[in-house]
Length: 286
Image 1 (cartoon, rainbow, N blue to C red):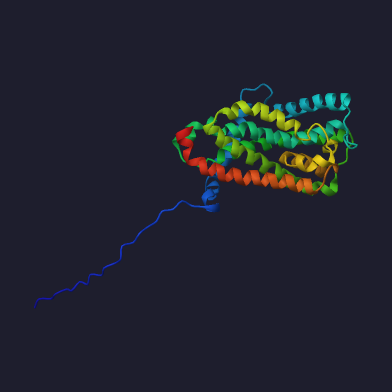
Image 2: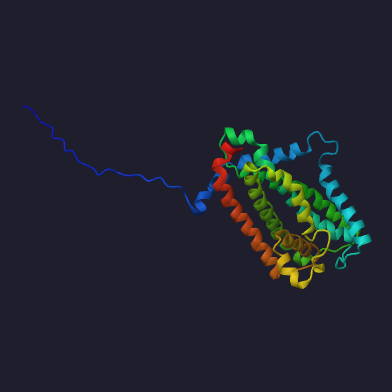
């Protein structure tokens, strides 16, 4: 007896698969930063080692640079110009502002050049390119921590009592400084891949931004009618916030601080999206 096996053939409709680029927050693919978190720590440690490699004074430069700047500012703006410091000894007044400013300058200089400086990595292997400007900013936190010890010594020497009731806000202003620094680093590093004019503009940009920020002087010397316009500089809010949190002087959480904070967040978010939108061209352009 012959058995016949009947096979039923079922016809399926053809399936069409659409491949579309991700949009919105998904396009940032921030999950990769967590996957490559060990590389972040390695790059931060490497940046710190390279910065002070084969230097005679090593990490002492993290102290020498802000201290020498403070001494110059003390002579020019305190002894000669006699600018008001709201009752705080000028060395303490200026050094408090030099802490977040130093973090910002590291991002401005090292972060802007991070992609070009690591072009071999960018062109040969895959990893989240965000790690490079991020590591430059986080490496600046090491210098910040070392210089902060000098500030404590200055406050003790000049018998300046910190604003104990406001110190809890200091980490918030440190976070604001990091957000501002990283936002600027993202913009400049991505632009520097295509246009090397960034390297030429950095010295001018650094000088201009320094005098546009109340580092050597108090924001109170700015006329009231210009305060809102002045607060469009995100570092103005950061510096004023540091002075307020540590010394209890200057502007607290007023409208100028919120304007500076909004600008900082805007620079950071727009920098993220611009960086990610141009990331796919880095290997070909660099």
